[in-house]
Amino acid sequence: MADLSSSRSVYRSFKQILHDRLLKDMLHTVRTTKQSTVWKVLVMDEITVKVMSSSCKMTEITEEGISLVENIGKSRQPLPALDAVYFIQPSQNNVESLIGDMSGKAPRYKRAFVFFSSPVPRNLLNTIKSEASVLARVAVLREVNVEFLTIDTQGFTTDHDKALEHLFGDHGADSRDYELCVESMAIRLSTVFASLKEFPHVRYRAPNPHAGGSDSKVAPIMHEWTYDAMCNDLLDIDGSKYTYEVTTSSGKKERKEVLLADNDPIWMEIRDLHIADASLQLTEKMQEFGKKNEAAQLRLNNKEGQEISTKEMQKLVQALPQFQDQIDKLSLHIHKRAQIATTINDQIKKDGLNDIGKLEQDLVYGEATSKDILSMIDSKQGMSQDNKLRLLLIYAATHPDKLDTAKRLQWTKLAKLSGEDMNTITNLECLGVSLSKKQPEGFSLQFRPRKVSIRPTRKEKNQDEMGWQLSRFYPLIEDVVAELGKNGLPKEQYPYVKLPVSLVGEASVTGQPASAVPLKKPHSVRTIRYNWAAAGKISVGSASSDSGSSTNEPTITGTRIFVFIVGGMTRSELRTMRKLTAQLKREVIIGSTSLDNPQQFLQKLRSLTTIDDID
Image 1 (spheres, rainbow, N blue to C red):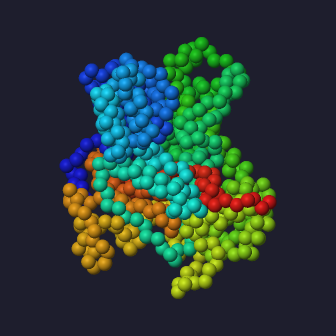
Image 2 (cartoon, rainbow, N blue to C red):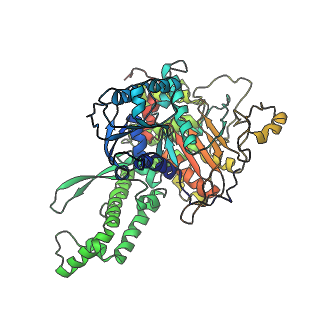
Image 3 (cartoon, helix red, strand yellow):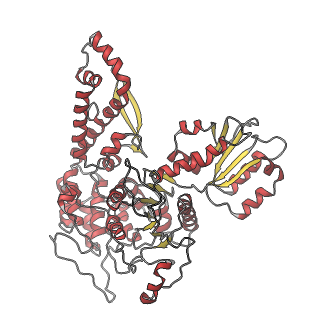
C-alpha cells in the first residue's frame, strides 16, 4: 500500500486529473512555448474529439489559445501563419495526413505540436522520422496517453459500443472484429493507467462452468428507481443532453437543451435519490428558495397575466441576475416546479411501473414465477413490448434451465412475442446463462423452494438501508467491491495473471504460479481485476493513489479501486461506485466499453444472433 501520510495534496477526482492532463499538460504547455503563435489550430480525429469533449469545455480550450478546431479526416483550409496542435490516434491514416500537412515547400501550418492519444507503433514513428521536412516543422512529438471518455467524476468508457456483439456474438473469437475490439480495448484501457501513473497487477474473474444463472446480467434490464436512472430510462436523453419544451410569455413553444452533468449542483445533489425523494426534495427546495429570494418569490407568485408594480419590477431586476442561474436550474427540474420529475412520475403511472418494478424485485429474490409474469401481462393489456421482454429476461437470467420448449411456446403465445423477441431471450446463452434443461455432468444445482427470502447466489440488503421496497435489488458488483475492500475476495474466483511479490510465498501453499515481476516500488501494492469471459462480466481491482484529501471532497485514505466491465455498464453500477467510495474511503473508478440504458442493452442483446422474424 502506498504511504499517503506524507502526501496531503488537494484531492482531485479521476475526471479532474484527466481534465488537467489535456488542458495543462498538453494545451497549456504549447501555449507557453517560446516563439509559438498566439492563436493555434487544434486538429483531432473522431475518437480524440470525443475524448476532449468528455473532459473539457470549448471555452477552456479557447482560453488556451485555440481559435479553430479541425477534423484531420476532412478537407481543411491552409493556415500557414498559425501553429497547429495535433491530438490524434497513432493510426496509419492520421500519420499520413500529418505528413501531408507538414511536408513540402508549402505546409498547411507553420509548426506542428503533435500529441498521440496512445503509444505509437515503431513503424509509424519511423515513417515520421523518415520525412526530414516534416521533422523540421514538428516542435513537439509526444504520447499523451488519453484514449478514453470520462463519465461523471469516477467513470470512463473505452468507446466500444459494439463490444458486446463483437466479443459475445455468434461470430466468435475467430472473427477479425473480435481481434480488433480486444486489441483496441486493451490499448485504451492501458492509457487509463498510464495517465494516472499506475502499474496494476491483473486479476480476473475465473469462469465457472457450473454457473447456470447470472444475476450480474440482470442489472442492465432492471428498472432502477433513482432520479438519474429514471431520467435515462424514461426520458429522451442523448448522453447527458436533455431536450425539453417551454412556453414563452407570448404563448409560443420553444425547445431548449440542457446538460445534466456535474456542472449542475442540483442534478448532483438529487441524481442518486429515489425518484420519490427527489421529487419531494425539489419541491422543498423551490419553497425554501422562494422564501429566501425575493426575486424568486415574485416570479413564483406572479400568475400568468398578472401585472407587477414598478417597485416590484425594480426589485426583480436588481435581484434576478444574482439568482437567475439557480432559478433556471430549479425551473428545469420541476417544469414550473416539476419539469423532469413530473414527466417521470406521469410515465411511471402510465406504464404501471410500480407493479412491474415490484414483480422485477420478486423475480430476482425467488418470490415470483413466470406464471406471475404472464398474469401481469394479461392484466395489463397496454404493457409495452420492451417491458414484457425485460420481465421475461429477468426471469430467464435468474432461473436457469427453466426455459424448455413448452415454456417457449407458452411465452410466445400469451406474451405475444415475435420471433425476434424470443431470439433476444435465447441470446442470454451467449452471455453464459443456461436456459434449457440439460443432463447433469456430475453436478446438480439445488434451488430453494418458492417464496424464500433470498436465492442462494444473492443476499438481500436490510430494508432500512435500502429505504424503498422497489429498491431491494442492487448490482452484484457492490458485493464484489465490498469484499475487495475487506481483502476478502476469493483468490480462486479471482486469480492473478501475475502474482504480486507480497503473495509469492503464499503461492507455494495454494499452488498458484508465482510469475510476478518485482515492482520498481515494492512498498506499493497495485491490483486490477477484470473479466471478459462469457461466464461473468465483473472486473475489479485496486491501485495506489497519490491523491490526498480536502475538507470539501470525499475523505480518501486508501488506495484506488478499479472496476472494468466488458460489454457495457449501467447507471446503477456507476452509482454504486460513488456510494462505495464514501463507505470505503477509497476512490472507486469504474470503466466499461460503453454506458448503456435498458433500451440500448436490449438492442445489443438482439444483435448477438439474428433470425428471420417468424410472425
